[in-house]
Length: 166
Image 1 (cartoon, helix red, strand yellow):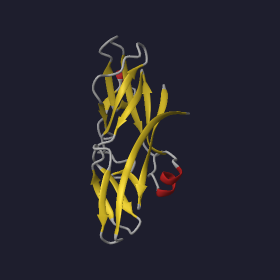
Image 2 (cartoon, one colour; image 1 turned 90 degrees about the horizontal axis):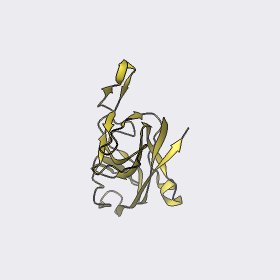
Image 3 (tube, helix red, strand yellow; image 1 turned 135 degrees about the vertical axis):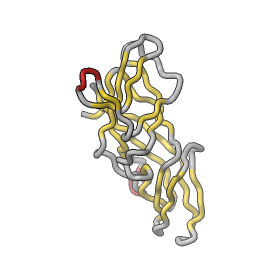
Image 4 (cartoon, rainbow, N blue to C red; image 1 turned 45 degrees about the vertical axis):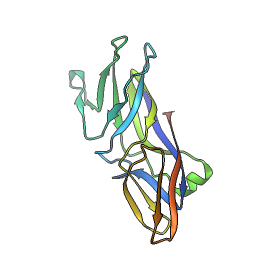
């Protein structure tokens, strides 16, 4: 069992608090990433999707998990279980300093998460207080004009990584 924290960073212009739509523990937010098999090291061809509200029973009734998947190459079965309560929004200060913010913790058994894919369902707030919801980051950036603050707002240079945590 290894825990991986999804860490994100981005350049936020006149924006703060980038996070999933319902907060970092949003039960409906979909996390997309590829999985690397712990045995044969093969990378999944398609992205895997996990959400907090989708659970499956583990073998022998020992709790639940968010994903059970078999490696297409070696046949080994692995699980990914999401652990809420450890994420926080990416602030403007963190963005300016290039610091990554933790979003979600994943308990992975038999797999290693890699290559997080930014999609839709994000929210962010302008420094003037304008809220932007259902932001789609699948194109790699976001740009608008904040009428209230009379300034452009932008998210660019999206970056993510998975860090092993204790």
